[in-house]
Length: 75
Image (cartoon, rainbow, N blue to C red; front, top):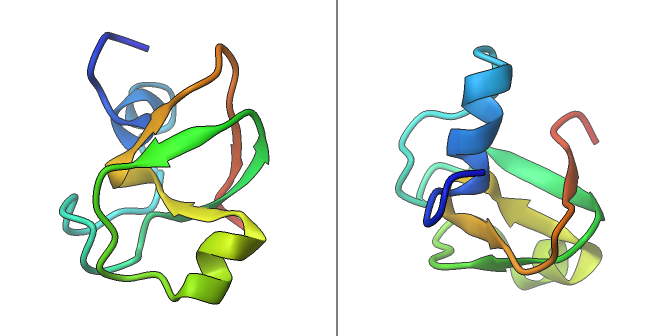
């Protein structure tokens, strides 16, 4: 990762087909399940509280708080 970039930006460099639409935390297209590590979401206008409690984040608004993060876009 480059300093200050979101998880989605990092993923797009390696996987051009990563799901996203708005990059603003509104549409929810980039919703991902955090399999490993921890992240912090800057904004969230798309996920319900039960989704975030279950471990889902918006990759376009998330930044790592641990050295390694593993996301699952298909769950």
